[in-house]
Image 1 (cartoon, rainbow, N blue to C red):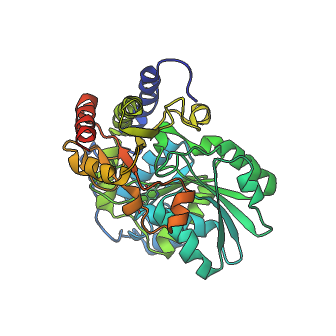
Image 2: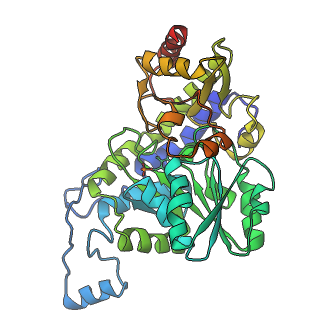
Length: 408
Ligand SMILES: *Cc1c(COP(=O)(O)O)cnc(C)c1O
């Protein structure tokens, strides 16, 4: 919930609310090393010794917390999971090998053959492929809707509907979905909800607080934040996470490596500080881009002209660090390419949420696997550029963008 107070003061308050958990959650004093290591040690061991025959049998019966095998549980991964649950405000969290392991696993832990899903038209392209191309082979159908339209989810319901999937703000056009409305519909009909919160991050939005059952992330993005580790997670109530963990990690083998858990935990200690800066810079850049003569439209929920602005104020803690914009007029595509090739401080690469600012042309890259009609329906024009704002100085970023736009 955002008030009328100055945005930067609200970002400071949000960072203050999260920073202690970012630093300390999950970092229990470590009994494993016996030297009181402050930083949870990187435990690479695959197996953990039993203290007795009965201890082994009890561990296998699930009657003790004794660790058994690295695919089932690992202390470095567990420390990360405690931090994640603290930030999302959920009872539990399960780390996974990647964001896609979390998305596919969360969906499959909720749905089986004969079930139907309602999902947004505008979503992460590989998640869209999962629902459109892969799950129908398992007898799971999806209807894609304009998730910004009130009533769209309800109109798409079938007797077989089991899951309502949300991703807000959406990739790459930052469309905002009314999460509480989707949750209310799900509860009224006894359906389940999954939210991909990668774009917003728990700094800007906590879907569990709005009633969502399972929250998924690509930790590869802002949570890790340094562009050096692939990972994902599923957050939610204890039983739901246990079911997802059993399927994704134990069954499908989508386990996060302890090394990546170590890196992502380290990244998360500065997560709220990074997001504070990134969200502030994104709002500044969105405002400046919106009045630049070469730019036809800017998509960022901070802008009062953004269709999701009022809703974002109600359901988000911040407007996020991603924005997209379209160059105007004839030759918008060529000019957009010139911007990609003209930036120097900003890097032309995929991924997002990184300490580095990253810019990409979705139509020819991240969303090129989407059929052209689906792309158009999702509001991804050929001239759209997506910018993930990093922690560089905002004036350096603006100078870089302005120079690239001037050359385009
Ligand atoms: C990157 C991303 C994913 C997939 O995550 P990986 O870690 O690359 O598997 C899923 N959803 C969103 C919104 C993403 O940005």
